[in-house]
Amino acid sequence: MANPLTKLIHPWYPSTALGLEQGSASMVDLEHRGNVGSLRRAATMKLPPELIRPSFFEPNISDSSELASALSELASSAGLSRQKRWSVSLPEATARTLIVTLEAHAGSNSELEEILKWKMDRSFGVPLDELSISRERLPKDGQDRDRYMVVATPLALLDEYERLFHKLGWRAGLLLPRHMGEAQWLTRNGANGDSLLLSSTTDGFTAVVFRGKQPLIFRSIECEPDEREDEFYRLLLFYRDRHSDSPEDDQSLSRFLVTGTAFSKERASEIINETIGGNLRPLHPDDLGLQLPTHELDFDMIAAPAGLATLSWK
Image 1 (spheres, one colour):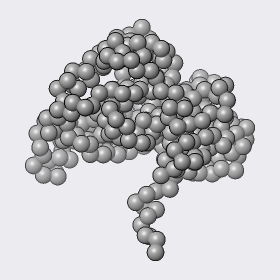
Image 2: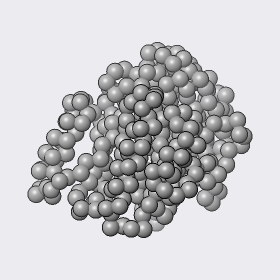
Image 3: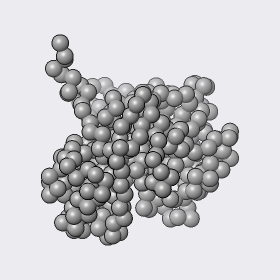
């Protein structure tokens, strides 16, 4: 007899996903056979840059009717106009992700809550009762300290996007910042060594180092275009120094994924190999188990929603 709690323990996710960014939107419908995925349907669309202005503190959508009309047109061109259930990757700036490391063990659950609340208050800059907050306990670090990953999105922004989807008659069961969709390609299957995601944003970049399926280092950096390489180099030095102090000697950076336009894949490879050592190259869709029907389809534009769509495979 089937477990009646299965849907709660292992929630069902659709194979269709939407990705929203400043200046663009993308849709995918993903299928898989074995460990290989392919696109049943996909479409991308350029949007007026002022239509979505990603922000953690301000409204994002300047004209919800215009955006709803554009998304309806996009769904029609993708052959997904009848689809009602979606996973959605939101612009990176709509959320804040924080890895909290506790300097000492909390003596009780109430003490733990107070410590986490204090650290979140200092980091997010928005009253906690105005945020949707999710957190996950991570493996302890090399010094046996407790760690937690916290993701926060303002309730007002979630409501703004949900009103947009209501206009379209859509139900968005999962709304996550872009890097969490892209990260699915690195964490979906176990891999030897550490993995790096380098994801461009409109005003900088987000970088995440994963050890297995868990984030080891997270940085979301705002900087000028000519400062990006120096900031990335500093992050890699931090990772290298952290790794050299780790008792897990068999762990090292073994693969990386670059998305967006802030870094060319070739330049990112040069910086990584010069700093960490080795001869790594950036991952391509084929390396990730995704077959694209045409080279004209830009993987960078669909990486986040397609990553969320892989959750339907589990």
